[in-house]
Image (cartoon, rainbow, N blue to C red; front, side, top):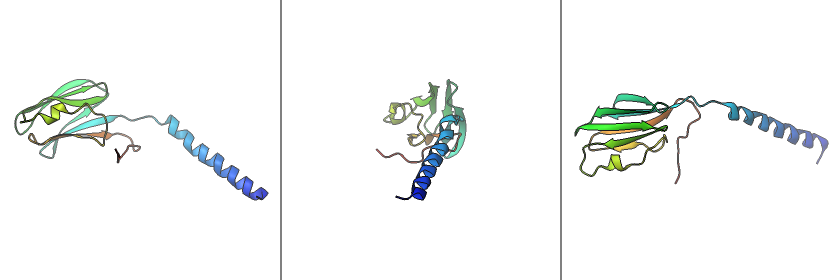
Length: 120
């Protein structure tokens, strides 16, 4: 290995480390829960503020709770109550879907550095 090769490798190593440093100081701009009924946005909830909300679904009211940076459905009118059985989420890849009520809750991150795929 020549001296020029060692210099190039050292330069690339230092450059790659320098490009990683800003990632540790980037601030998260926050996440929002977007509640849509019949594909129409009804609410946009800030996950940093706890609260209880209600939207009118197809079969009746859907009660939504934001707590600890996560969103969940606590009450709704549907035959098997699947959406109220779903765990609280803050993940943009895993939405809460209430098909009988035609209500979907998705998470949107305010920043650009958000996941768009999750493999289980």
